[in-house]
Image (tube, rainbow, N blue to C red):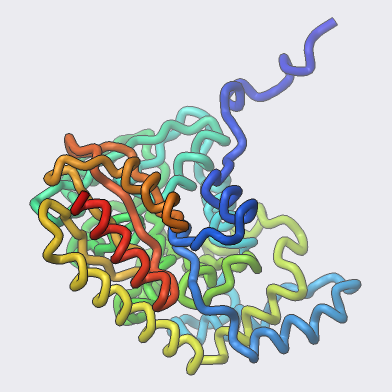
Length: 366
């Protein structure tokens, strides 16, 4: 009698469920300060809370196709209409739909590293091959290498994905380089999860009009502060959205997130408040830690900051452990560029940010 495991698609063997240990820790011990998952420290606005309460009473009804919120998203981004927008249960599901639309076993997905881990996970689940092109380190900068990305494209390449601004480095790719990749014709996904912090003028949504191969992903988890509601979306040419939509699970975004998202998108004052707060706190932390000997700070356009304590002879993992002993959860970063000193801090409340600065200074002065 054959084993059930003989029937699994072979590329799933050895793959593991994604588990965020730092999130498990944060929920288990809620006294710890969550400065590790790029969450927004400010709670949802009253308009969003009211929408949650209103539509919570309608949770016994299936949602519609989200035409109203898709229309709003299209209008915000200067696109024609809801046919240019695809909704997902967070941008993670959006990536799943995009990857399933283009990648089959043996195909390649090209990513720029260091970057967001979801690209690897979705590629592996489809039997694809992930090709990683490293950024270039120059002092206190990690720079995109568009030449290396383009050179890595081959007949097996099905998707090129670039986070812009990048996670965890917090920087943008030059517009000229974005255009060079777009002109290759390869399906090109620009992950704009954090773009609102720098302003939508930094977005490449408009490129989807002239380049059907360009797709832009967004989320309401970051600047809008709705990580727990799971709402993301894809912007693209109608002809592309129509095909990818065939992979969409019916009712993938629930009634409550749909209407809470619309309330958040309409509450521009709340968004501006969150952006101002975030950017002022990035400036505060970067300025407060600038004089720490041997600590390299990578300037961020997002809601997190990457550091390297390697020049001071310190390990990032030790920094994370020390912070936890002081009640703060930082994010460890695997060694790279010959340094074991990398770690990342997510912006918190004012008090949390001051605590973080004090903890980092204490660690590096010991």
